[in-house]
Length: 190
Image (tube, rainbow, N blue to C red; front, side, top):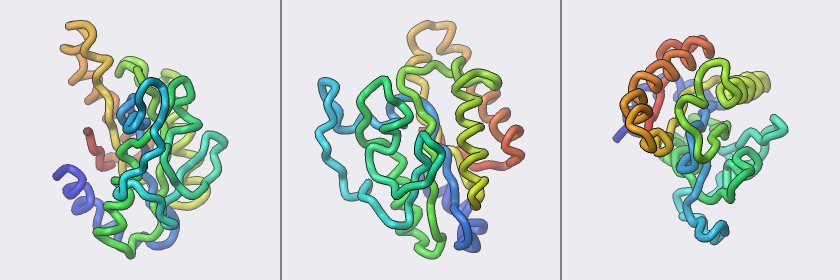
Protein backbone atom coordinates (compact mmCIF):
# COMPACT_ATOMS: atom_id res chain seq x y z
CA UNK A 1 0.00 0.00 0.00
CA UNK A 2 2.81 2.43 0.88
CA UNK A 3 4.57 1.71 -2.42
CA UNK A 4 1.32 2.35 -4.30
CA UNK A 5 0.87 5.68 -2.52
CA UNK A 6 4.39 6.74 -3.47
CA UNK A 7 3.77 5.86 -7.09
CA UNK A 8 0.51 7.82 -7.09
CA UNK A 9 2.17 10.78 -5.38
CA UNK A 10 5.21 10.81 -7.62
CA UNK A 11 3.34 9.60 -10.70
CA UNK A 12 2.87 13.06 -12.15
CA UNK A 13 6.61 13.58 -12.15
CA UNK A 14 7.50 10.05 -13.18
CA UNK A 15 5.16 10.01 -16.16
CA UNK A 16 7.03 12.91 -17.75
CA UNK A 17 10.50 11.93 -16.63
CA UNK A 18 11.63 9.64 -19.44
CA UNK A 19 14.70 11.85 -19.89
CA UNK A 20 17.26 11.24 -17.17
CA UNK A 21 17.06 8.90 -14.22
CA UNK A 22 14.32 8.65 -11.62
CA UNK A 23 16.54 8.30 -8.56
CA UNK A 24 15.65 6.59 -5.30
CA UNK A 25 17.91 6.60 -2.24
CA UNK A 26 18.03 3.29 -0.34
CA UNK A 27 18.96 3.98 3.28
CA UNK A 28 18.76 2.36 6.69
CA UNK A 29 20.25 -0.81 8.06
CA UNK A 30 20.58 -4.50 7.20
CA UNK A 31 17.08 -5.20 5.90
CA UNK A 32 17.51 -2.43 3.32
CA UNK A 33 21.04 -3.45 2.42
CA UNK A 34 19.77 -6.98 1.85
CA UNK A 35 19.87 -9.96 4.12
CA UNK A 36 17.38 -12.04 2.14
CA UNK A 37 18.87 -15.44 1.45
CA UNK A 38 21.81 -14.93 3.83
CA UNK A 39 22.30 -17.83 6.25
CA UNK A 40 25.43 -18.39 8.33
CA UNK A 41 27.19 -15.48 6.59
CA UNK A 42 26.60 -16.93 3.13
CA UNK A 43 24.19 -15.69 0.47
CA UNK A 44 22.37 -18.54 -1.26
CA UNK A 45 22.36 -16.64 -4.58
CA UNK A 46 18.62 -17.01 -5.06
CA UNK A 47 16.96 -13.99 -6.67
CA UNK A 48 13.16 -13.94 -6.55
CA UNK A 49 11.47 -13.01 -9.86
CA UNK A 50 10.33 -9.62 -8.51
CA UNK A 51 14.00 -8.74 -7.87
CA UNK A 52 15.29 -9.79 -11.29
CA UNK A 53 17.61 -7.48 -13.23
CA UNK A 54 16.01 -5.13 -15.74
CA UNK A 55 17.91 -3.00 -18.27
CA UNK A 56 15.94 0.05 -17.11
CA UNK A 57 17.26 -0.25 -13.54
CA UNK A 58 20.71 1.06 -12.62
CA UNK A 59 22.61 1.26 -9.36
CA UNK A 60 25.19 3.76 -8.20
CA UNK A 61 28.35 1.88 -7.23
CA UNK A 62 30.67 2.70 -4.35
CA UNK A 63 32.89 4.38 -6.96
CA UNK A 64 29.99 6.70 -7.89
CA UNK A 65 29.45 5.23 -11.35
CA UNK A 66 26.21 3.84 -12.76
CA UNK A 67 25.94 0.17 -13.71
CA UNK A 68 23.09 -2.23 -14.42
CA UNK A 69 21.45 -3.11 -11.09
CA UNK A 70 21.49 -6.68 -9.82
CA UNK A 71 21.29 -8.24 -6.39
CA UNK A 72 22.94 -7.78 -4.03
CA UNK A 73 22.44 -4.03 -4.55
CA UNK A 74 24.54 -3.04 -1.50
CA UNK A 75 27.44 -5.45 -2.19
CA UNK A 76 30.08 -2.71 -2.31
CA UNK A 77 28.42 -0.38 0.24
CA UNK A 78 27.63 -2.53 3.31
CA UNK A 79 30.95 -4.35 3.12
CA UNK A 80 31.28 -5.49 6.75
CA UNK A 81 28.62 -8.18 6.29
CA UNK A 82 27.34 -10.45 3.55
CA UNK A 83 24.55 -8.88 1.51
CA UNK A 84 21.74 -10.69 -0.23
CA UNK A 85 18.35 -9.61 -1.49
CA UNK A 86 16.79 -6.37 -0.25
CA UNK A 87 13.69 -4.39 -1.23
CA UNK A 88 15.33 -2.04 -3.77
CA UNK A 89 15.09 -4.17 -6.93
CA UNK A 90 11.55 -5.34 -6.16
CA UNK A 91 10.53 -1.70 -5.67
CA UNK A 92 12.12 -0.59 -8.96
CA UNK A 93 10.59 -3.49 -10.89
CA UNK A 94 7.20 -2.66 -9.41
CA UNK A 95 7.51 0.95 -10.57
CA UNK A 96 8.36 -0.18 -14.09
CA UNK A 97 5.49 -2.68 -14.19
CA UNK A 98 3.03 0.02 -13.12
CA UNK A 99 4.35 2.58 -15.60
CA UNK A 100 6.83 1.31 -18.21
CA UNK A 101 7.14 4.81 -19.69
CA UNK A 102 8.93 6.26 -16.65
CA UNK A 103 12.30 5.52 -18.16
CA UNK A 104 15.36 4.63 -16.12
CA UNK A 105 15.18 3.96 -12.39
CA UNK A 106 18.42 4.75 -10.56
CA UNK A 107 18.94 3.09 -7.19
CA UNK A 108 21.42 4.68 -4.79
CA UNK A 109 22.39 2.17 -2.09
CA UNK A 110 23.38 3.84 1.20
CA UNK A 111 22.27 1.39 3.92
CA UNK A 112 24.63 -0.06 6.52
CA UNK A 113 23.58 -2.99 8.68
CA UNK A 114 23.39 -2.68 12.45
CA UNK A 115 23.24 1.11 12.53
CA UNK A 116 21.28 3.21 15.01
CA UNK A 117 19.21 6.23 13.97
CA UNK A 118 21.64 8.40 15.93
CA UNK A 119 24.33 7.35 13.42
CA UNK A 120 22.24 8.88 10.62
CA UNK A 121 22.08 12.34 12.19
CA UNK A 122 22.87 15.36 10.01
CA UNK A 123 26.62 15.91 10.05
CA UNK A 124 27.38 12.29 10.92
CA UNK A 125 29.39 10.00 8.66
CA UNK A 126 26.45 7.97 7.29
CA UNK A 127 24.39 11.09 6.62
CA UNK A 128 27.29 12.77 4.83
CA UNK A 129 27.89 9.66 2.73
CA UNK A 130 24.22 9.52 1.75
CA UNK A 131 24.26 13.20 0.75
CA UNK A 132 27.51 12.75 -1.19
CA UNK A 133 26.03 9.79 -3.05
CA UNK A 134 22.78 11.70 -3.72
CA UNK A 135 24.74 14.61 -5.21
CA UNK A 136 26.77 12.26 -7.41
CA UNK A 137 23.60 10.50 -8.55
CA UNK A 138 21.95 13.67 -9.86
CA UNK A 139 25.18 15.08 -11.32
CA UNK A 140 24.93 12.68 -14.25
CA UNK A 141 21.34 13.63 -14.99
CA UNK A 142 18.20 12.70 -13.20
CA UNK A 143 16.01 13.68 -10.30
CA UNK A 144 15.66 12.26 -6.81
CA UNK A 145 12.10 10.93 -6.63
CA UNK A 146 12.09 9.31 -3.21
CA UNK A 147 13.84 7.83 -0.20
CA UNK A 148 13.25 4.26 0.88
CA UNK A 149 14.01 3.87 4.59
CA UNK A 150 14.24 0.52 6.39
CA UNK A 151 15.80 0.84 9.82
CA UNK A 152 14.96 0.65 13.50
CA UNK A 153 15.91 -2.72 14.95
CA UNK A 154 19.10 -1.38 16.51
CA UNK A 155 17.00 1.27 18.23
CA UNK A 156 15.16 -1.34 20.29
CA UNK A 157 18.17 -2.38 22.35
CA UNK A 158 17.59 0.25 25.04
CA UNK A 159 14.34 1.80 26.24
CA UNK A 160 15.87 5.27 25.81
CA UNK A 161 16.62 4.67 22.12
CA UNK A 162 13.20 3.10 21.49
CA UNK A 163 11.40 6.05 23.06
CA UNK A 164 13.54 8.60 21.19
CA UNK A 165 13.25 6.88 17.79
CA UNK A 166 10.10 8.66 16.57
CA UNK A 167 11.48 12.15 17.14
CA UNK A 168 14.93 11.23 15.81
CA UNK A 169 13.38 9.79 12.66
CA UNK A 170 11.21 12.88 12.12
CA UNK A 171 14.30 15.06 12.48
CA UNK A 172 16.20 12.85 10.01
CA UNK A 173 13.41 13.06 7.42
CA UNK A 174 13.17 16.84 7.88
CA UNK A 175 16.94 17.25 7.49
CA UNK A 176 17.07 15.06 4.37
CA UNK A 177 14.29 17.01 2.70
CA UNK A 178 15.89 20.32 3.65
CA UNK A 179 19.41 19.38 2.53
CA UNK A 180 18.20 17.92 -0.76
CA UNK A 181 16.00 21.00 -1.25
CA UNK A 182 13.03 18.70 -1.81
CA UNK A 183 10.49 19.74 0.84
CA UNK A 184 7.87 17.19 -0.26
CA UNK A 185 10.24 14.32 -1.09
CA UNK A 186 8.24 11.08 -0.85
CA UNK A 187 9.63 8.76 1.84
CA UNK A 188 8.69 5.11 2.11
CA UNK A 189 9.35 3.67 5.55
CA UNK A 190 9.36 -0.12 5.71
